[in-house]
Length: 288
Image 1 (cartoon, rainbow, N blue to C red):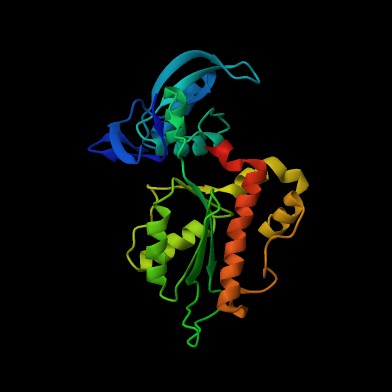
Image 2 (cartoon, rainbow, N blue to C red):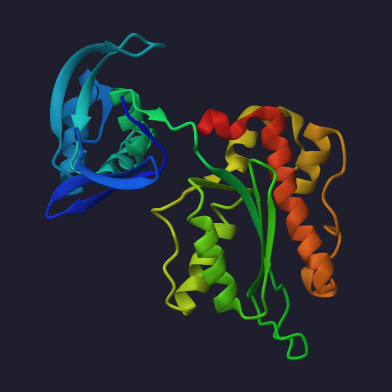
């Protein structure tokens, strides 16, 4: 039984490969099995038809497994790369064909099927970014959409605020820091922080650490567990409602109206709020 942290897949010379980190060292092995999911046995031929129209050629295996709710027998559908699972799921949903366990990421699937455990030294940090939200400011040296501040708070409470008017240097320093962790946790980061970081790094031909770090958006976990309690998904409202106190600062003002010190304070408190939410509700532990 292995204990590993970061894991991702790649395709090399037509073969699906796994790369993972154990004891601080990266290892690469051929994938132990193909990505797979399940469909109702009665729908397997129709499912295969639609997948082949997408140029996905699956392997089909009948099983004795049954769904929990309807006790319907399912067939196992195996494909060559994990991306095909997601693509097939989306199309089959449109065609009103249920797919089961198609939302399990391939790295999670490997951990489950082979009983690989997450290493006890799994390093987690919470992060937030602030971007310039006005036009170019020649006096302060900021440009539209520029990332001007990034705060990181790790699970041990160590705080770090990266602030640099040279955006390229700021992003380069952040990439270096990010690689020290196995998971970085943001809020609405799938839709804002990560895409914005990728977009800005592309301008400077930097390589965003997609593979070295697992990026986790805690907002989706909160929406899944606390939807009835929350009338708004703003981090300010979420923290006040779930933790019972106001934690965030300067959220009633736009970034360009704040002094540099207040921008850094706002960014840090956002990252701290994520850690406090996780300390209370253990979202990350559930995701790992």
